Image (cartoon, rainbow, N blue to C red; front, side):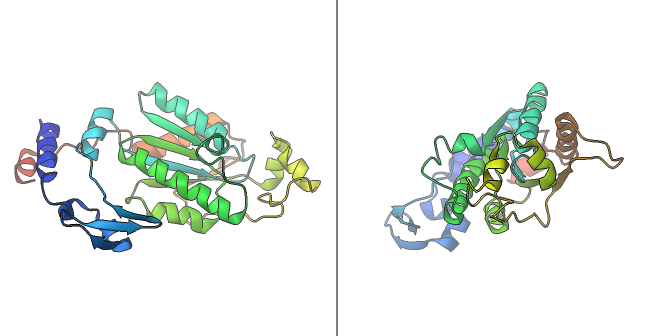
Length: 260
């Protein structure tokens, strides 16, 4: 009933002028140029575009899914276990009946970002694009797992700044480079040391560690024991549970619904 009421309220709001529907953040970052029927914006290289709100509010989608949308942003050196832990976590969440999507760095470069290389500029654009995609998923109530080296702090923080409070959870795989080189599942470190790969993160290109990551995953636990991917995934699930991401948003009271 609450979801139905909110849906009707959202439909009613959709009949208001476009000025009322325009996103506040877009109003600040884009110039209004024209529009007798509503505000028209120039955003980046695009002109004469409008922002349209969806007819189904985010809260309704999260109620349907029984969870809250969030982006778990895995970052760390090549070989730190980002993809392995993300995959393990996705399986564990699926077993709990949770809706997820996994965006992996290599996979995304096969399609959406296949025109990008590994220069600083291309890395920045790579992260910007996946940040926007993951934002859309989170706003639809999906638990979104992204696995990218994302070596530059400013790029990660730029993604965070584009999302609502609580939607971006940085998960830093703090695995020493020596251990990553020992694993070297793709043989990339060996090639980089031999000079066959230039601009490789951790060798001749920097990795900037997160300063305020919500989650820091180490190779060993507090007792000094090596952690398995399952152990690491369990730590992340505990974090999600404690902060309510694995439950639907609380429904408003009758009085709140009546005055909304």
